[in-house]
Amino acid sequence: MPTRKKIAAANWKMHKDPLQAQTFFKDWQKLLGGDQLGAEVVIFPPAYCLETIAVSSRDLGFKFGPQNIHTADEGAFTGEVSPLAVVKMGASYALIGHSERRTLFSETNELIAKKNVAALRNRLTPMFCVGESLSERESKKTNAILKEQLVAGISEIKSVLGAESQLRLVIAYEPVWAIGTGKVATPDMAEEAHIFIRQCLGELLNKSQADSISILYGGSVKPDNAFELAKMANIDGFLVCGASLDPQSFFKIAKALNSVSI
Ligand code: PGA
Image (cartoon, rainbow, N blue to C red; front, side, top):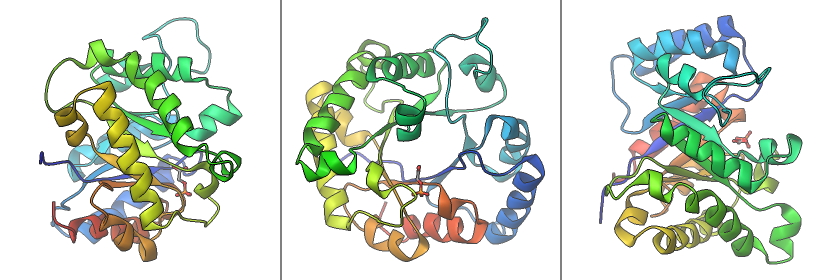
């Protein structure tokens, strides 16, 4: 079995300004106290905090990236985020296809696929989000939806990904009904979806590549449910909003990943 990276990712959405981000990292530094976490920590701040985050990341050794990118590297695209510019700032990840981008900003599978390409072209690791809505789950369409999203997002990047065994790609499974609702998927429910996602990745790529891709769970992850979820064999980390805004609770979530064998 290949070793998969454990990842604790924070999606701050439109929360925190640069000063609040600085305060977060002062507290984070105290919590770390010179220790290293076993999991890689990735922060997705609002775009106007990227500069602050870049400075803290150099001292504290975490990774960061934007919550969204444009498909082009530069041009007349008012209000958009250039993947090339964020790489120059030190970003190494890009969050792609979050359900809020899909539903509130009308991002289609086709557009999201192009964003995955733009990320890889710039050597950013896409943290590619997939997940079903409540009605899709209730009508037993979860697997069909996950497959559709994965096929669209991965087919486009297959040639860009290359044949390396350790691919530059992370998947975040976020059931839409669990995001910000306090309704977390049970560990078995999440594990079942992760196994299905890995199976699809095996069909789209190859088995050893699929086995090496970290699949994160997201949706109401909290310090008190992180440990049970982290114990599942196919849950390689978390993508967290609500509980990542407080350094103490995000630290506990990252620690939950430490205590399971890596
Ligand atoms: P939540 O959000 O942790 O607040 O449920 C997760 C996300 O939207 O990525």
